[in-house]
Length: 157
Image 1 (cartoon, rainbow, N blue to C red):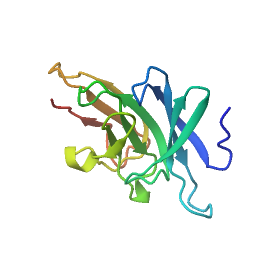
Image 2 (cartoon, rainbow, N blue to C red):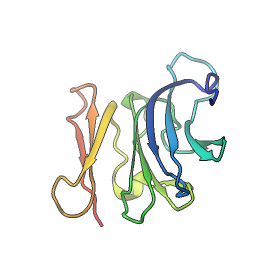
Image 3 (tube, helix red, strand yellow):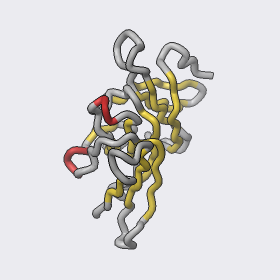
Image 4 (cartoon, helix red, strand yellow):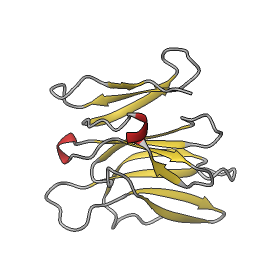
């Protein structure tokens, strides 16, 4: 059991083998209400190592302040799991983060580099090859229709 009681609220969870060692790891999104005091909570990567867990903060443009949804996929088709994290409150100014896995569970947020750093009130997401071009595409739902329709990011190889 991992005690995350002092790290905020955790509405988002996704599971995959993030470090390529054959066992499942997790990403836990963290939500902090605007009036709560203290430093922003960071999204967490939980790396399973035998009988123990290594807890790593995910440093991103979102800062983990309002994470509502997360999804592991192999976005760049290199054999390791990349991580998409969306902010649940676009008024916070934090864009969507898309972490590229550089291998062994080392993640770099490159959302701005690939045009996936939209500001949504993201609440859910899905991935599939929508246009059947061989690359994954991503849809993020938005909880308020006033800001935008669901966002679709077309992947490329």
